[in-house]
Length: 341
Image (cartoon, rainbow, N blue to C red; front, side, top):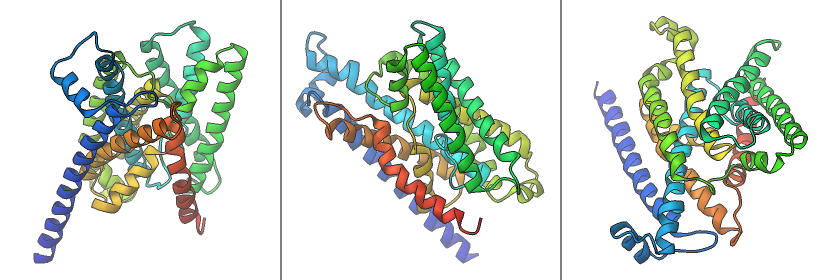
C-alpha cells in the first residue's frame, strides 16, 4: 500500500512539474514568436505598447496584431491538434509508428484540397475545411483497408508501410491534379506546410473545432488508456471497443482535418510528441493527452521560429523543419519495432 501511494505521489509530482514547465516554455516561445520574423524583428517595448495601447496607424502594431499574434495562436492550435491526434492513434492501435502524417490522414486531406482548388476557382475557407475532413477520412480508410487484407494481419511495420504507400499514391494524384488544372502553386503551399498566411478569420473558424476535438479526446482518455492494454483486456474490463474506436476516429479526423485546412501538411508532430510525453509521465492518457496538446503547440511554435530565422529574409516551411526532427525519429522507431517482424 505504501509503495502504491509513493508511486502515485511521484507520478503526480512529475506530472505537475511537467505541466508547469511546458506552460512556462509556451509563454517564452510565444513571446519569441511574435517578436522575431523573417523580415522584421519587433522590440519588447513595441510589443508591450502595442498590447496596452494599439495604434492602427503604426505599421509595427499592425504587423503584431494582424500577422504575428494570429500566427502564434495558430501554431499552438495546430500543434496541439496534431499531437493529440497522434497520441490517440498510438494508444488505440497500440502502434508506436502511428500518426496522422504516416497513416495517410494528412495526405488524404491534401488530395481533397487539390480537388477543391480544381473544382472551384477560389474556394473559401469553409469549402477547404469540408474537403479536408473528407480527405482525412478517405486516406485513413485506405491505409487500414490495405493493412487489413495483408497476410498475417496488422503489425506496426506493415501499417507504416501501407501508410507510406498510400501517402505516396495520394501525393502523386495531388501532383497530377495540380499540373492538369494549373494549380501547382496553390497545392504546393499546402504540401509544404506553413503558418505564413494565417489570418484572424482562420483562428475564429478553427478554434471551435479544436476545442471540441480536445474535449472529446479528454473524455475518451480513460478508455484509450484501457485500449492501449490490448483488445482482450479492454473487452474484459467492459469497454465497448468498437464504439470507442469510432469516437476516436471521429476525434482524429476532426483535429487533423482542421489542422491541414489551415496550414497544410505538417508531418511528424503527431509521431514525436506522444513518445516524449509518455517517456516523462507514463501511459495514463488522462495525463498524456493534455500534456501532448501543450507540448505539440510548443514544438510547432519552435519549429516555426526556426523556419523564419534560418533562411532570413526568406522563410523555410515549418513542415520542412518538423521533418528534419521527425524523419530520424521515425527511422529509429521503425527499426526498433521492426525487429522480429
